Length: 220
Image (cartoon, rainbow, N blue to C red; front, side, top):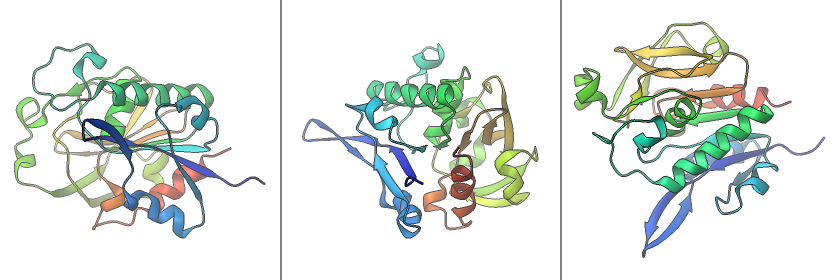
């Protein structure tokens, strides 16, 4: 049996006027401890690297350009069209070939957008998200006992690092968790496509291993 390879869609930083790709060590820790191979996907050679991967994790990052969901710019900031394009390619690839995908924070938002949904460009201004002003953590509550939600608790505390969120849910997805009318986790009804709004890799409140184990269980 061949070794499993978990691919990571990197984030982009501009250093000395050049784009630099990176993935936080926090993401790699669990897989390194379990002797699971990881691959940081080269966005300049994306299709070749995708073919090597058994599942994909797309990490957090800057806002998505609102043109990706056919809206005018109002509150989005710091978007990167190269990253948007990379996430679109990855999500379409995973959808077409049934490759397990976990989108974290921005990764969940990208999953929703590139499957046909939309975002609040700023949840505080557009979705009565006043609680977000001061909260670095909050509770999430299970709303559907489906998929990933079956291996997680009904309620638990998660971290909070985002100002955008899902507005219109993409077709054929189920909401798993919510908080204060905000969508916190989703999963496709028939394909292994999962999104969580919090950052399990730097969560001081819950053990992320169940999320990673669930993702790995979807590999065929």
